[in-house]
Amino acid sequence: MDGKKHRTYTKEFKLEALALLKSSEKSAAQIERDLGISVGMLTKWRERYQMISGEKGGASLEPSDLEAAKREIKGLQRQLAEVVEEREILKKTVIIFSRRNG
Image (cartoon, rainbow, N blue to C red; front, side):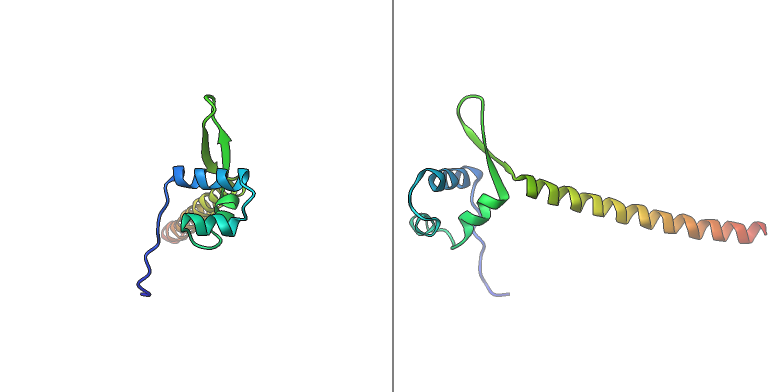
């Protein structure tokens, strides 16, 4: 292992950082330096999340449409793999029973 620890950030921190990026005239790189986060994190967060305005004026982070679609695709791929495996088991079962009765 390389010994590096990955920092985790709360949704609130990400939300505030993205709001700062949106409202500030500073570059993403400058904001990243000011906040002490890794280079490119704001760009990743902006791609990964969308800011949703709440009813009471607050905002929250939700997965972007692209991220939601990626998650759905992964779930569907897992489900397809299970169905394919079940089908193969059923095929083998049919072959075994057809030999016994034939």
